[in-house]
Image 1 (cartoon, rainbow, N blue to C red):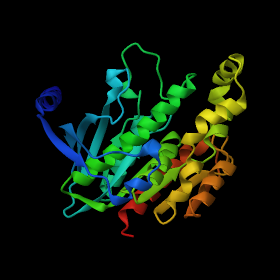
Image 2 (image 1 turned 180 degrees about the horizontal axis):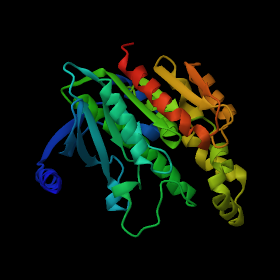
Image 3 (image 1 turned 60 degrees about the horizontal axis):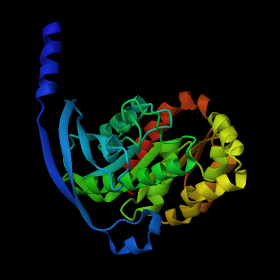
Length: 317
């Protein structure tokens, strides 16, 4: 057994790193994208290294530069994992985003279930998560520095757009069936990305909603940040003004005409049902599943929710 493990480790270490280039070509609809999220034509390089293979799919590490350059060089490289189905023919492609608590195992599980259903999944780590956090630094995607946090949110959306472009360039991908999904924070970023990327025509949002300023102001984890904000002499109205440009409700009308699915908790204490309902209404009232749970008690519903998400993307529209 030990010998097999050592062979597996040696095989992983010996996996070659391949490189390539992707050219992002804006569609004629790019002019309609709000300036905050608009992208110019560009060519970017990427690295790819196989991690493992199963009977149904293979997993590769993918790295490419973020479209946004920050002062932290580690944060300027997007780290992702590509779950490529072994099924023949053109496959739909989906960008998978993680929760605020960085439970990457949950995102990998979702990506694996998508791949099981023949859907290629690219799990993307958001700014300042995982390898993107500078060693020893206290910087986080969301922090007391609200302006920088909103910059991270915008960067994450543009990273998703570049990730979708990478997916579309893969020979096994049907570029007419590109989507994005996420849970909680990942669902909020997914909603913003889907609304503002003409290439993304399918989306599934789990435990996500609109009215981001109010969500961030009232969420249990924000108590310390809220006090620091008020102690600095700024008001709740000032906070709303900073966050509002990244509120999914601002752009949700752009989801109309796209294939969208939502799931929410009817007693969610982080993403209130009213926030989920507001996003649902502005998005054109897409199919919605309500679970009898809160945000933290949703764990028992996540497995069937992920199966439902995989089925949604696997079925041809």
